[in-house]
Length: 218
Image (cartoon, rainbow, N blue to C red; front, side, top):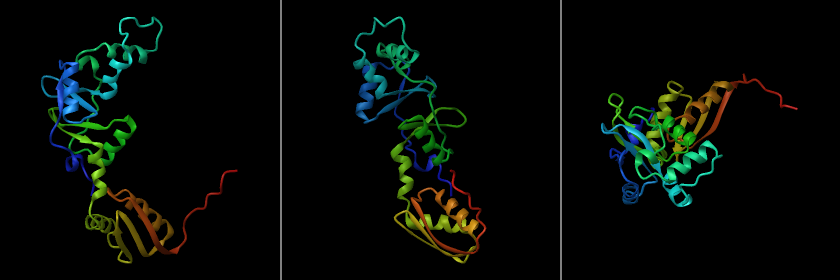
């Protein structure tokens, strides 16, 4: 079973308008203990995000009207943000979003690659914000019960009645016998992809060795 964002997301979206002031953004983030807040347009569609890093530039760059003529693009953008007073000038764009139907695994990869802690969840048709997905929400997949994991693993194994399954603490243990060594390897790799599985311990044996041995690089 592929777990979707809708299964773990928060149905409350904390966001500010584009014209929100610096002080309003700070109050919102402190009130709800957030590291970032989405910025939405008049129709409720995310257009960017303001993070703690964006706000900290105000303190890090107190001299905001004497920027050097020769500076990198990134430094110039930071300099401009340090002098900003509204969400539209402070925010990082474009907004990175997911939909309720996005697989949690894909959302987790997006968070990791973009180094962000939360994602606005939008309606796939209107683009309006529906909720928020936090890293802690994604980690909830690892709290699935042993019964749920075992059910999904057995569904994946299908008619391989010669394979036994046990689950404890998110770790799946396989025992029994299959026809080929490659089949045992493939089975383990597929079970590792089940959301909530922390590790797979294989005690499988097989009748035929059909793996190709690759010599080590010299």
